[in-house]
Amino acid sequence: MKVNSTAVLGLQWGDEGKGKVIDCLSENCDAVVRFGGGSNAGHTIVVGGEKFILRLLPSGVLHPGKLCLIGPGVACDPDVLQSEMNDLQERGISVSGRVFVDFGAHLVLALHKARDSFEETARGNHAIDTTRRGIGPSYADRVSRIGIRVSDLFYPELLKVKASNLLKMHKFCSRGEAGEIVDEAGRFFEELTSYRKFFESLADDISPRIMKLIADGKRVLFEGAQGSLLDVDYGTYPYTTSSHTTVGGIFTGLGIPPKYLGDVIGVVKSYMTRVGFGPFPTEMSGKQGDRLRERGYEFGSVTGRPRRIGWLDLVSLKRMIDLNGVSRLAITKLDVLDGMNEILVCEAYELNGKKQESLPPNHPDFSNVKPVYTRLNGWEGGVSGVKREANLPVQAHAYLDFIEKKTGIPIGLVSTGFGRDDTIFMK
Ligand code: IMP
Image 1 (cartoon, rainbow, N blue to C red):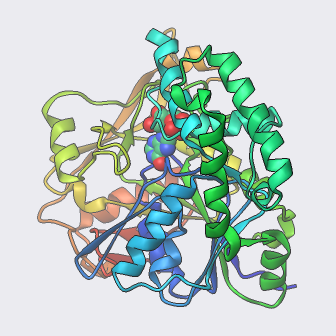
Image 2: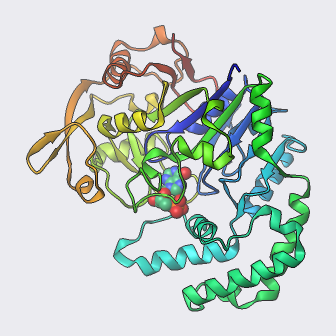
Image 3: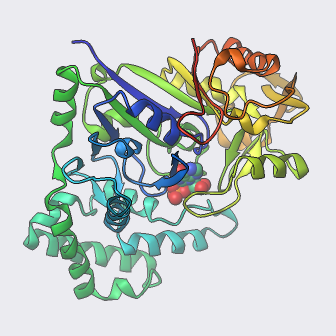
């Protein structure tokens, strides 16, 4: 079987610019698939000067006619999905008949959002600074086996029992503090029932569909959400999201075996950002960080929070490349570094006076490492909007060569601006 599928995964703490990369690659694809995360994602795409922010719909949806699938590994907030689909329809992008959600996807409900805020408050000094979209609590209900799935909506009697159990659990765990919604079983059941109609035309069995598409030679893109360093097991736990954002999430989140995956593209921002709390060895403070934040519009697309800014960290990058089996890199936001006199890249860490080139195995150590930097020259002029490799300034080329050499992975694509056309496909 010739496999024409590609995964696009973020290799940092999310917001690497995956949305734009997926949008660019979608043109030559038949289907784009989300396998994990939920509406905590915010993929920003600019088409013809018009800005779109997608939270649940796969980024390929902006290309007419492309099939968009949402797998069982996704935490699906029906309100967000509904408003996203309505918004696109209103803006002239037809979504009907080409968006499908797996029967097994768990719902994110109002009580999960209330609970997310409640848990953050309860964590006190150890808060994660979640997006408060109810993602963690919905995944928690999934593994506690009390979650409500799309399929449950079609079985009213079962739904009633599950709804009442879920309420009982939430009420017990949060002692009523998760909001009045917990006290109103009738209203809760009504809320759930109201989603049935919406899902009637969307609910589907996604795994066989994907396997058939790939076996028939169709091109399928697996769209990652968040970044590898936010993976619940392999990220900077507990300052992570609640799902598997790394390559394994594709198989468990879609119900397909590894033989259906071809290429893995790792998306890397040319500097780093992080929203929320947790360790960030290369974080920069002061004017330089502020400048990059402004130039890169580094404010959360879901919550508007200012993102923390840092230099590229090759130590964590190399680990995430290995972990995901990355075959090509996509470097994004190179234009944001225009005007920098020098560019720092972290090549090793110093921990307790000793230099090390690998990621420390546990989180407390990761908070204490000091970056060891290599300094590269910035470039004259700018790369903003450059569309051909030959037109890149020498120093920008040197920066990309440095990343390729140090990681051993070829760069296939470089993004030099927000627009679809501000992209270089490297030779
Ligand atoms: P949660 O996923 O809302 O539970 O948030 C957990 C952590 O992951 C927080 O630090 C969030 O800021 C971060 N996070 C979740 N989704 C994204 C994303 O799409 N981009 C960047 N950070 C994210």
